[in-house]
Image 1 (spheres, one colour):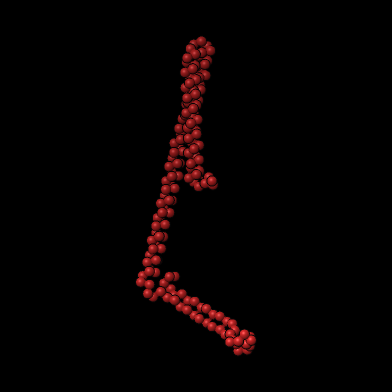
Image 2: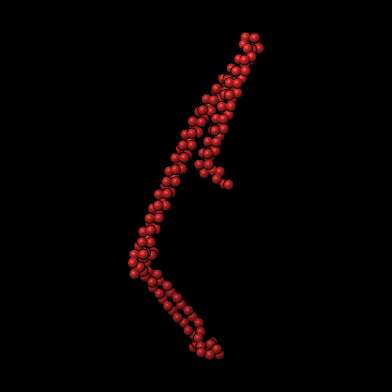
Length: 159
């Protein structure tokens, strides 16, 4: 549009008189019509340079947009992989926690039967608590990864 001519049409209508008393007399009407055409003939390449600059800015904006999209996809893929890995670790730690709970029950039963010392019960209890703590920490990490994934997918940005 910068290379096309600009066409302006200006018109006015009114009355004119040398004396105030004859302002509204017949024959005192006046009008004017002024068409104008403006065309950039001698801008020494300024318009073309402006178009080139706009096109370069468009290319840069598209490249930055594509980069942001690729970064978002990469972030989501990484978070999905991390979430899957954490879920597998949680499942393994929950199995360990259950096994340690069974071991504690067996150690307590052996102690009650007089076959084992109380030290074995305390050791089983310590291992059971450690397994429970590890499972809880891994569940927390899984929930944090789910929250990060939700945020990366566009949720929770209202703050």
